[in-house]
Structure formats: C-alpha cells, structure tokens
Image 1 (cartoon, rainbow, N blue to C red):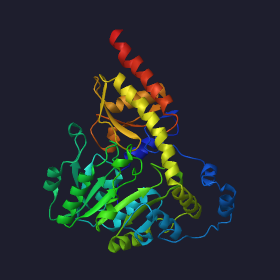
Image 2 (image 1 turned 30 degrees about the horizontal axis):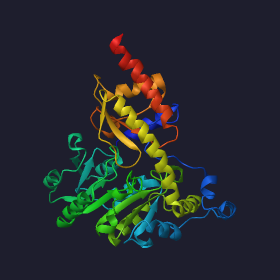
Image 3 (image 1 turned 45 degrees about the vertical axis):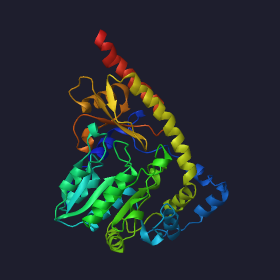
Image 4 (image 1 turned 120 degrees about the horizontal axis):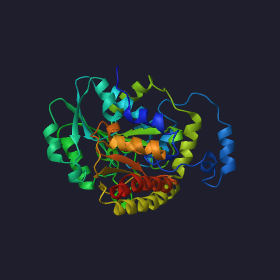
Amino acid sequence: MRIKEFKIDRFYARYEFSTPYMISGSDAETVTIQELLNMDGRGEENLRRMLELKLSYTEAKGDYDLRREISNLYTEISEDGIITFSGAEEGIFCYMSGVLKEGDELIVQYPCYQSLHEVARANGVKIIYWEMREEEGWRPNFHDLEGLITLKTKAILVNTPQNPTGINLFREEQSRMIEICRMNDLYLFSDEVYRLGEHNVGHRLPPAADLYPKAVSLGVLSKSLGLPGLRMGWIATQNLEIMESLEIFKDYTTICGSGPSEFLAKLALDNWEKLIERNNSIIQENLSYLEGFMERYSDLFEWVHPQAGCIAFIRPIFKTTSVKRFCMDLIEKKGLVLLPSTTYLYTDTHFRIGFGKKDFKEGLDQLEQYILDEIVNSRYS
C-alpha cells in the first residue's frame, strides 16, 4: 500500500505546537483527567477504580460496558453494533481497507478530510468527488449525485456536520441521501464526528446507522466532547457483514484498545450532556466574536455561516495571490495558525478557522491586528 502524505497532519506537525496562537483546530475545549474523574461527583471512587485497573489486553471489539454506553447515543443500535477504534482515523482506515475492494467506486462529498478518500484510493478504489459549492451554500446537489452513480459504485460518503464548512444536512436532505442509497443498493459511510455540536439542538440529525441497514455512523470523543487525548472513536452499524469485516481488519491495526482510555471514555459518556453544554457555551461565545469580526471586515472576507461544530470556512476577497501565503505570513508575523484550504487538496481560496477553545479571542485579536497593519492601513499609507 502506497499512500500520499496527509496534508493537514503534516501542516500541524510543523506548526501546531510551536506557535502561540492556534485558532484553526476542529476540537472543542478539553478537560483534565481530574476534572473528568470528578464530573459525576465521585472523584475519589473513580480514581481508586482507575488505579486498580490491570494493564491487560482488552476486548478486541471494545469494552462491553463502553459499547453499551456508546449505543445509548443511538436508537436502533445495540452494543453488538458498536466497534471501537483508536480515534476516528483507525475506523476510517479499517472501513476503507476492510469493506471496500479494489475496483469499487466511492462517491465522496468534497471538500473533506483527506483520509476519507485517500486511504480508499491507496487500496485501488476509484474516488468520485461530489463537490459542494459555496454559491449554493455548501449544500448537497442531489441531481449531481445521481449523475455520478455507476454500476461500479459501492458506497457514498457524507460528512455531517461537515468539515471544513460547518454545514449540517437538513433532515430532508439526509432522507434523500438514504433514499438514493437504498434505490441503488449502496453502502453509506456517514462521518458524524461533529454530531452533538449543533448550534441549534433542533437541527440535530438522527444517526444514519439508525435509519439505513447498509449505513455506518462514525463517531469520536475528540471533537464535540473535546477529548482527543483519549483516542476513542467508533463505528455503529446494523449490518453484521460490515461489522465482521471491520473486526477482521482491526486485528491488523491496534488489535484492541487501551484500558485506561476505555475507563475514562465511559466516564465521559456518562456525562456527555454536561460536556456538550460546557463546550457549546464556549463555542457560542466565541462564535459571537467571530461574527463581529466578519461583520467589521465584510469587505475583506466572506463565509457561509456555520451551523454546527467549532469550525468555519472563510474566503478572503481582498487582493491576494495565495491564501496559503496569507496563512504562512500570519504564522511568521503573528505566530497565528489558520488552516489553508490547500491542505484539503482544495483550491487556494479559503482558510479554516476554529473557535472551540477558551483562548480563541486572543488569537482572533492577533488576526484583527494583522488585518489592520497589513491590509487596512496599507491602503492609506
């Protein structure tokens, strides 16, 4: 297997931990282990239980009680329909390698996270891009989708809430998606890692795995719950054939998970509503700062307002030869990291901003000062 470099991860490997202002991340504010242990008011008991854990191998499919906790996020999925992974990335890798085969075609909503198509491509799967257009509000065009389906199409991949745009499918759009998959007997890979982070809880979609037997729902604790350090992701499905393929392939990756991570993940899921309420409060405050920035500089930047999660995809409309160069100049002059759209293998026209962390306002102030110094004031100098 020969695979191309992961543009986003290579970019972050260079700048994420070496610059003072990181306002492009896609995860919410995290907590300490101590805060997580104390979240249910039984901190001492939880610490004792964790310290008594034996560092043994764990169940390959994932701890039973953990899978039962995860299944509570679904209505049609039991613990037997859940398999856990080391983050969402391993789940993506196992599905693209274990379920899809060389010669299959995968239709991928685009722009998107690179591994959602790159792993499959490296395994000989033909990737067909289903492009979302900014002038259409980044919304899905189903006429386009139907025109992409061929006799070799095996699956459709959708990410909702979507990275990098922050757009969430409407219920009728999700229903149309599933109807198209059912009519063409296609698998549906639904990347739902930003689920639970909707800005309006009334817009929260049911998981695709609950609605369609050939669907899988990808979940993770990293994004909306803000716990990437636990490295805990999962796939939910009603389909036993898919589950068997995932289990078989996982034997060649991590084999099983980390016992301490599984223990802490169970605590997080016991208290997921508290974590979501806390993180969404931070996100909403930061989003108000970002909305003010976008209003003040509406002659310099455009966006489609995000509906979920803590990311937005912004397009500079001032004269610039390269958004990537703009982002690199920010790193050099302000120590501020924005994510250029080229890291998505997309046109050099946008950047991703992340507003899930408590220190977001400090970074946004640096961005505004740069805009004033380098763009606004230079017009009058």
